[in-house]
Image (spheres, rainbow, N blue to C red):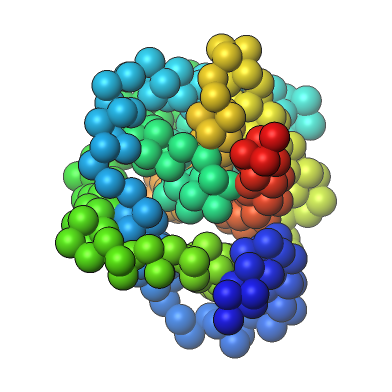
Amino acid sequence: MKKLCHYISEYMAVLVLAASLLALAFPSVLQPIPTKTINYLLGVIMFGMGLTLNLNDFKIVFSRPKDIIIGCVAQFTVMPLLAWVLAKAFQLDEALALGVVLVGCCPGGTASNVITYLAKGDLALSVGMTGISTLLAPLLTPLLTWMLAGKSIDVDVAGMLLSILLVVILPIVAGIIVNGLWPSFTEKAKVYLPAFSSVAIAFTVAIVISANASKLLAGGLIIIIVVMLHNLFGLGLGYLIGRLLGLADPKKSAISIEVGMQNSGLASSLATIHFAAYPMATIPGAIFSVWHNISGAIVARIYSRKMDKNKIT
């Protein structure tokens, strides 16, 4: 069983890609599953990650706020500017350009925490960055979208905060409490958690693709390329920033993943609610939701192997 779990987490990228292709080929299989199921899946994953943490991890992070400030500044400068540059460079039409910019202006998503965990990065830093960027998003997401795309939006502040509380904070706190009360149980469970998270992410991606299959097929090759470049440049620049500042490898991995992976579900929701006149604006968020999990699985494996290699040497 342990060997099977090792292979599942080791080849997560293959698993996610296979789930993506199957969901795109047979979307009707998973379409009856409501997309809100994703929140429950993420909540369970976050609980599992909480089992690997203790309060000390967060004390260390918040006693060194510089790392979180670096990450959040990178989050709200690198991705919005990249989005604007790519939209101009590829001469996207107004609706698609708006969708790309909207993705870039959103905070980090909960998927980044899962990928950081699988990458053996600084999970406490990743969770801290997600929380702070989400708190800043009600102000910065509309402001940056207006500055870069010339469009005004309203962000549901209470809804965003409630979502991050229910999906991220509470499950992690519950996991930390269980870890503190029953450490022997959590020690045994840790072996299986990466594999469980990998399967849950693959299932999440399949649900997203099934719900957006027609939009994904209608998006065209150019927008897919733009979304891929947006994510990959974000991951690369996030890592470069950590390297230039001389941060340790776990922190570099966390910042890279946090910067490169956006709350693209929020971007699609905002596009649907506020830009009904631009229906194609929802497509970049839908594509990003799929692609960043595939690229995340790949970088998680790369960063994880690098971390293991550094331990040996």
